[in-house]
Length: 421
Image (cartoon, rainbow, N blue to C red; front, side, top):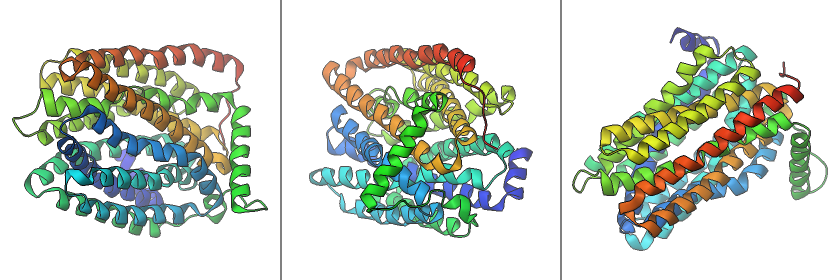
């Protein structure tokens, strides 16, 4: 903990960015649980309806992401983050209008709009991070970011469930909207270096031509960087199998407390958050900060995910479900954290926005496919056989584990180890 405290104390602009992440994520988990329960109730427990809600979070940023990356590399990154926060605050407020099953479509529409705007925030934050810290601080900073995400997942999930149960949907959505505004205010105070904050000079021609040219330049860079291409697929690997859809069905149908599905869902998200905190913290003991070592540690992240899926398929009690989710989240967090650091350490600053946007797009594409497949399988086999669906997901999760195990030795043999100074 002293190392994290020193990192924040010695880098006040990074500390502001981190605090912005804290308050924004806290509200996000209020939003997620409230809307998931709302969709499940409005749709009568349809697995497909829940999957459509999750798709509304994945598909828009997947489509917008590559183009968002061009703008992140061309425009002022700090201002883009602020604009993303302010607009999301407005969108979340509009969710208050969805007060009945007949307005379920509005939940989908506004959720899609919220996460379209989010396509600029997370890649922009990751691209801004190296300009606020020395290179040796990136592993610690990304681990802190992962811990923060996980802690807010655990704390926000529990708080969101309690607020939804005690005060209702409107209170949770109002809190969510305010957190985006607080995040924007914190980012306003960050001092950035103009040269790194606006990394890519604008090209000549129309805006559409400039964006297309910028995207082509990013793809050309990727074509000549096989190691970067490989790491951009790590987040896609952890997104195979929709854990969110499974948790919602488990909480509402298998492990609900009478009419209360918010509490077990909060417990599951909390367990997932605890696992995500633990993963990189435990494996950092074996991490020297080099790209070479982090590539090898990602393999253990994939292994933990497979074990988590397999345990979840056989879990007969809520505590065992929590253990399974903890294991899966440990693996997810390890892969997410180390893949982000590898990109920050090996990609030139002028391409960071595009690489992180493509990174997220691959994650969202795999996630969207998994959500559709999971929802279809749950509806096809029925809720009574949802464990069979989870067992199938356990089998699918071994695919990225196998591929990464085969690819890494080849990368080490053929690609020279290069880190950006």
